[in-house]
Image 1: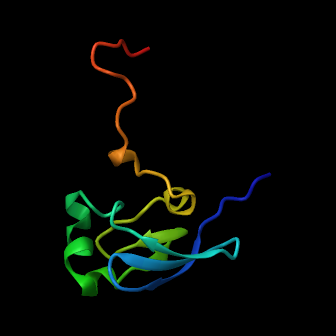
Image 2 (image 1 turned 120 degrees about the vertical axis):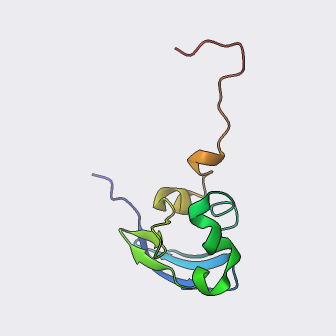
Image 3 (image 1 turned 135 degrees about the vertical axis):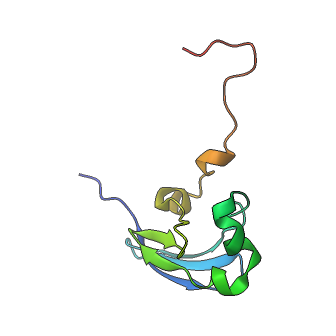
Length: 96
């Protein structure tokens, strides 16, 4: 059975970069700009360096005191957050 890779520890660097160690032992410096670029819940994260640095590891991912968090699979696989993905169905096409 495949094991999910989650965030084990974090070290805030110069915002918006976070040093992330995953449960598989891999460590990366990840630019979080894309992940915190929109949404009211991320406003203090992107606009206040002190608040950015208040991040903790909760539930296997990066989380902030106001409940903002980032999907650990998106972080590990460097995916596009769901809210930033374009709808693959073009105008005029039927949804099936």
